Amino acid sequence: MISPLAIDGTELPQPVPGTYDVRVPIQDSEHETESGGTQRNVIRTGRRLVSGTWRVTPRWVAAFHAIQAKKAVSVTAYVPQMGDVETFDAFVSSDLEAKAVEGSERIGSVAGLYDVTLQLTEF
Image 1 (tube, helix red, strand yellow):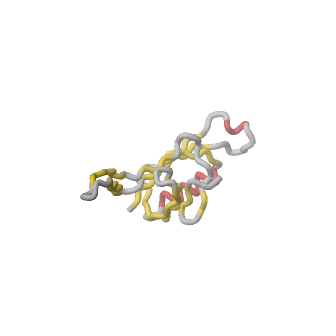
Image 2 (cartoon, one colour):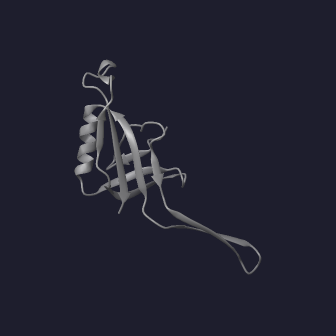
Image 3 (tube, one colour):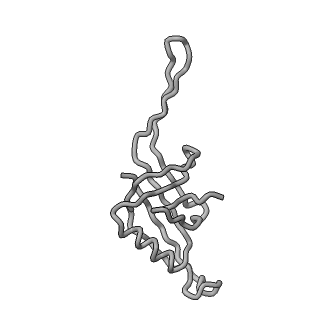
């Protein structure tokens, strides 16, 4: 299984299922050519947006805070819309949210687990 997201070369843990999203705004158009064929144009119309939630240990919460503190990061992300892995520069475009997972201190982690939500926008 490929890691869906790496930031500055560090692969992040797998996100919580159903929360990872990469948006690439595109415009799709078709028209008929002079010879009677059909030509399709797909044009990217905006910046990539990556968002997700990760269930992580306090060590990873600190790593996410370090990412948020940077002005720019290099992002390598699997883009389902394109079916490929792409690398681009981005900035953290949302406040980092870290919430303690209720009851997680009893399931193998002394310090508990946290749900961290992050959003990145391409420059």
